[in-house]
Structures are given as structure tokens and as C-alpha cells.
View (tube, helix red, strand yellow):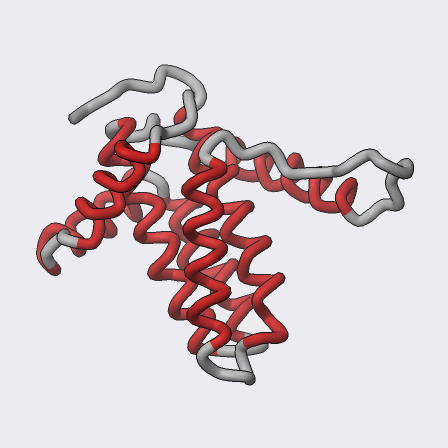
Length: 168
């Protein structure tokens, strides 16, 4: 998987923004059918963590997850169906990576989560920041929401790592 060019990313975002309600519902339904464990994580577990703090940000997070799913599907096609065991192993890897980020590092050594689609991640994080900044009650939870969207992209990328295909 290569990082999307600015042009491809822009085209995918525009595609996602112009999906009609029926097509959007079909995408979500198919995702829930084909990836039930991941759908449960992205649309129930992760948002519930945010909803404990701020319901508006939780709903916005789910919108961001939908956008990410649409962008990946539009650019890379349908993802291979994953099992619950796959998700458990991915979540364990994510947990280890996030824990590693919270340990003191050597001076001058930066720690970062590995994401191929860094431009997409930047767009989503900026969008979260902009939305949260509109209401002071959301601001304290920007970091949590951005961490969960980072985890979401990592999960989506790991689904596509094997056998990526271009569909458009």
C-alpha cells in the first residue's frame, strides 16, 4: 500500500462527500455484514469511549470512520473479510504500540504510530480539531478522539495490506 497522492486523496474525499444517503447506507450495511467484528469496534466500542466524555464528538468520530471506510473502499476496493481473531491480534498490536508511545523515550528520538496514509490521517485529525474547537466542552477530548481515529486507520490499513487492489 502506497500513500495516496494529494490528487487521489482529494478525489476520494470528494467522492465520499458526494455519496447519497442510499449508497451510504448500503456501504455501512455491507461493512457491518462483511466485517462484523471491526464494525462493532469502530461504530460501537470506540464511540462509546468518546461518548462517556462527549456525545457530539462521539457522533462526529463515527462520521469520520464512515469517511475513512469509504475512502479506502473507493481507492483500494473491497477489503478481504476478517475474523474476530484477526481483530483481536490487531487490537493487541495497537495496544502495544500505544503503550510504547507513553513510555519515556531517549532524548532526540521521536516515537510515532506507523500509518501509510499520513495525509488522510492529518485531514481527519484536523477535522476533529476543528469540530471539537467549536465547543469548549469538546476540547479536552480531542486527543482521545484523534488517537482512536489513528487506531481506526491502522486497522483499515492492516486489512488492505494483503492483496491490495485498485478499483476505480
